[in-house]
Amino acid sequence: MGSYYSLLLIIPSAILFLVVKHFVGKKKDNAVSLFKAALKEENTGRFEAAILQYELALQEAEKKGFDKSLRLLISEKLKVLHTITEYEKEMYIHPRVYKITPGTKL
Image (cartoon, rainbow, N blue to C red; front, side, top):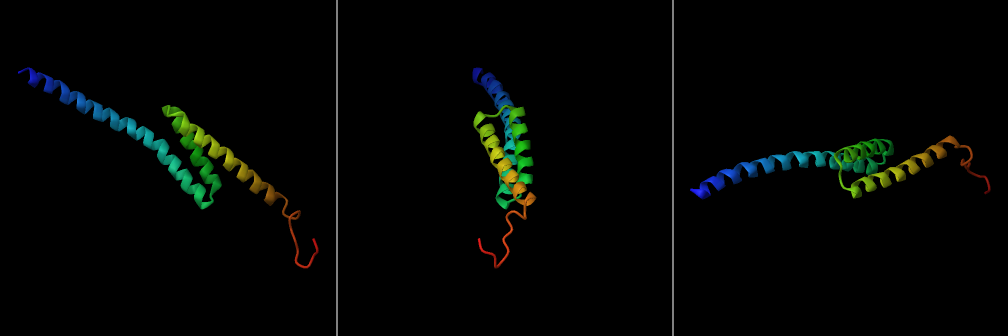
Protein backbone atom coordinates (compact mmCIF):
# COMPACT_ATOMS: atom_id res chain seq x y z
CA MET A 1 0.00 0.00 0.00
CA GLY A 2 2.90 2.36 0.77
CA SER A 3 4.36 1.89 -2.70
CA TYR A 4 1.03 2.92 -4.22
CA TYR A 5 1.13 6.28 -2.42
CA SER A 6 4.75 6.86 -3.35
CA LEU A 7 3.84 6.10 -6.96
CA LEU A 8 1.05 8.68 -6.76
CA LEU A 9 3.61 11.21 -5.55
CA ILE A 10 6.36 10.37 -8.04
CA ILE A 11 4.28 10.38 -11.25
CA PRO A 12 2.78 13.90 -10.91
CA SER A 13 6.11 15.34 -9.81
CA ALA A 14 7.81 13.73 -12.84
CA ILE A 15 5.15 15.18 -15.15
CA LEU A 16 5.57 18.61 -13.58
CA PHE A 17 9.35 18.37 -13.99
CA LEU A 18 9.02 17.50 -17.69
CA VAL A 19 6.60 20.36 -18.35
CA VAL A 20 8.90 22.88 -16.65
CA LYS A 21 11.92 21.52 -18.52
CA HIS A 22 10.03 21.83 -21.80
CA PHE A 23 9.26 25.53 -21.28
CA VAL A 24 12.76 26.38 -20.05
CA GLY A 25 14.23 24.60 -23.06
CA LYS A 26 12.07 26.63 -25.43
CA LYS A 27 13.29 29.89 -23.92
CA LYS A 28 16.89 28.83 -24.43
CA ASP A 29 16.22 27.68 -27.97
CA ASN A 30 14.92 31.14 -28.91
CA ALA A 31 18.25 32.87 -28.26
CA VAL A 32 20.21 30.00 -29.77
CA SER A 33 18.04 29.94 -32.89
CA LEU A 34 18.55 33.69 -33.31
CA PHE A 35 22.29 33.13 -32.95
CA LYS A 36 22.21 30.41 -35.61
CA ALA A 37 20.25 32.66 -37.96
CA ALA A 38 22.79 35.42 -37.44
CA LEU A 39 25.62 33.03 -38.25
CA LYS A 40 23.91 32.11 -41.51
CA GLU A 41 23.49 35.79 -42.40
CA GLU A 42 27.13 36.45 -41.58
CA ASN A 43 28.34 33.53 -43.69
CA THR A 44 26.33 34.73 -46.69
CA GLY A 45 27.91 38.17 -46.43
CA ARG A 46 24.84 40.09 -45.30
CA PHE A 47 26.51 41.81 -42.38
CA GLU A 48 23.78 44.35 -41.61
CA ALA A 49 21.18 41.61 -41.24
CA ALA A 50 23.63 39.60 -39.12
CA ILE A 51 24.14 42.56 -36.79
CA LEU A 52 20.39 42.84 -36.27
CA GLN A 53 20.08 39.12 -35.57
CA TYR A 54 23.02 39.15 -33.15
CA GLU A 55 21.56 42.12 -31.28
CA LEU A 56 18.23 40.32 -30.95
CA ALA A 57 19.99 37.18 -29.73
CA LEU A 58 21.97 39.21 -27.20
CA GLN A 59 18.81 40.85 -25.89
CA GLU A 60 17.12 37.44 -25.58
CA ALA A 61 20.14 35.97 -23.81
CA GLU A 62 20.32 38.85 -21.35
CA LYS A 63 16.58 38.78 -20.76
CA LYS A 64 16.54 35.06 -20.03
CA GLY A 65 19.78 35.14 -18.01
CA PHE A 66 21.85 32.67 -20.02
CA ASP A 67 25.40 31.73 -19.35
CA LYS A 68 28.02 34.38 -19.75
CA SER A 69 29.91 32.59 -22.52
CA LEU A 70 27.05 32.96 -25.02
CA ARG A 71 26.68 36.66 -24.26
CA LEU A 72 30.44 37.21 -24.60
CA LEU A 73 30.53 35.33 -27.89
CA ILE A 74 27.70 37.40 -29.30
CA SER A 75 29.24 40.69 -28.15
CA GLU A 76 32.59 39.76 -29.73
CA LYS A 77 30.86 38.90 -33.00
CA LEU A 78 29.06 42.26 -32.89
CA LYS A 79 32.35 44.12 -32.41
CA VAL A 80 33.88 42.38 -35.42
CA LEU A 81 30.86 42.99 -37.62
CA HIS A 82 30.69 46.66 -36.67
CA THR A 83 34.37 46.98 -37.58
CA ILE A 84 33.78 45.29 -40.94
CA THR A 85 30.79 47.47 -41.80
CA GLU A 86 32.67 50.65 -40.83
CA TYR A 87 35.56 49.59 -43.06
CA GLU A 88 33.19 48.94 -45.96
CA LYS A 89 31.55 52.34 -45.48
CA GLU A 90 34.95 54.05 -45.54
CA MET A 91 35.83 52.28 -48.77
CA TYR A 92 32.62 53.43 -50.46
CA ILE A 93 32.82 57.03 -49.21
CA HIS A 94 36.18 57.69 -50.89
CA PRO A 95 36.06 55.74 -54.16
CA ARG A 96 38.24 58.21 -56.11
CA VAL A 97 41.13 57.91 -53.71
CA TYR A 98 41.42 54.20 -54.42
CA LYS A 99 40.62 54.38 -58.12
CA ILE A 100 43.35 53.13 -60.41
CA THR A 101 42.96 53.69 -64.11
CA PRO A 102 44.60 51.40 -66.64
CA GLY A 103 47.82 52.66 -68.15
CA THR A 104 48.91 54.82 -65.23
CA LYS A 105 52.14 54.19 -63.41
CA LEU A 106 52.03 53.64 -59.69
